[in-house]
Structures are given as C-alpha cells and as structure tokens.
Amino acid sequence: MMIKPDDKRSHPRVPIKLVVDLTATDDKTKRLAMAKDVSLGGMFVEVSKPLPLGKSVVVGISTSGGPAPILLPGTVRWNHPTGIGIEFGPLGAREKSLILGIYRRR
Image (cartoon, rainbow, N blue to C red; front, top):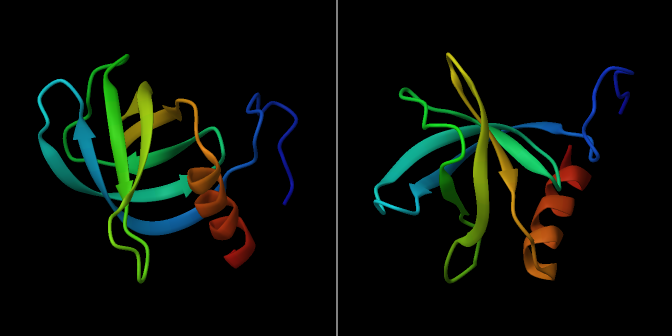
C-alpha cells in the first residue's frame, strides 16, 4: 500500500465496506453506520448526521461466530459532509487482532 507523502497518519488505512454500530458514549444512542476505511489508529464512518468534534464514541464490529461485537473506543476528530473521522483510544490485543485481520483480507 502506498502512503502519500503529505499523509500524517501513523498507521496506513485500508478501504473497507463494513456495517458497524456507532454509539455516542454520553447518550448511548446506537446508530448503524458504514465504515469506509480503517487503521490501527482510527476509521472513517459514513453517517447522515455528523457528530461534534471531540465526541466520545464506541464502534461495535460484529465478527462471524463471535458471541458479542468487538468494541473500539474512540473520539470524533474531524467531520466531512458524508461522515466522521474517528481516532481510536487504547486498543487491546483482541481489538488490534481484528483490525490486522481486516488488513490481511484486503
């Protein structure tokens, strides 16, 4: 994967098309959304109504055969007319393994 020289991300993003549960941690409202790219540092999620910058969120990703979704804590870092950029908080081994598995499938 080629990284543009002006890209300041620590981790390269890979394109995906994945339905996720997006929950704002302060109001617990769960929304279905479409993740469009992901890295170990964050993801872009298409939403019809962007959330405010700095909003704490949890992204839930269901795995095949998994009993419960894997939850990725994050913060809204930028808005776009079609969605939001989320920076992940600290991730455990299970969460990192999920994202690295997505990398390998692309």
